[in-house]
Length: 351
Ligand code: SAM
Image (cartoon, rainbow, N blue to C red; front, side):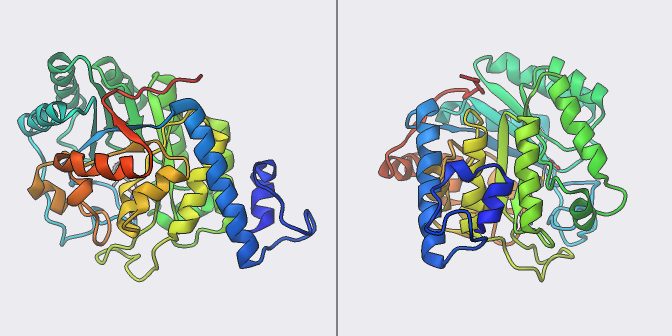
């Protein structure tokens, strides 16, 4: 981690300068390790000031892996002819919610590819059914790029939050990760529309995606500071064998944790998950994410057959502590590092 990186992000005041303060642009491995540890500790303390030792859980329901988009990194991209496609019916989704509610989940995240079957009318109907059956629950949508009118209609039908990672704040980098038909400008416009509709809005990015530079990450942090999302998803890039990026290496777990910690310091009140990708890249990734300032976990509530097919990257976790049914195992693991999973909607609060 370069000193220049911290300075550019305006975060030099958050970490102690090693000896030779201000003069060097790079650190020895020992110095870098020290700076990282202090950064994680400060981020953890900042999270504890606002959330105590509470960890919020969201039940993730992967509603469809059918997608019209062709993101070059993603295993469910339209161009992957080998992906076994599926779509959950509204009844199956409602069953997942019912099961999740019994397990103590008070937020359901409906995530999927950009599947044209999920028209505004069908999604709105589903939202109304979920909200009338479980009025104590929040619903988060993560169904990609839509029009302002569509976001507005879905918000009125009951969606509380929307996750749409910006993927990268650098338009040149964005163009390397996506085909020309997918524009960075549209992604940004969508994020602005979501905020304008009153959603608690989630942005985010992968760490270590192909051609990502340190400057790209600085841009990501500056974007977050400017946009002030209520939620931020940050996970390592992990290659998928049937994508154009199959041959690229995975992003670094350590660097992902640094970005989580910096995001916590920049946005102290944000809801920040220890992501599935982090848990996939390292067996103790969730715990390390929490110890670097994360405060949210998103176990999987999808039916088992669907989980296996919602394969965004190689070896994506969907069993063990990742599976919502095993919330007791997850609770124990989280208790072992001094935190408690709570039964709560876990809405964003700015104080
Ligand atoms: N279609 C919706 C969208 O675009 O927001 C939601 C589904 S999309 C698959 C969810 C997220 O998965 C993306 O925003 C991306 O950051 C992440 N993702 C996709 N492929 C990945 C990979 N190979 N490694 C890590 N994360 C990946």
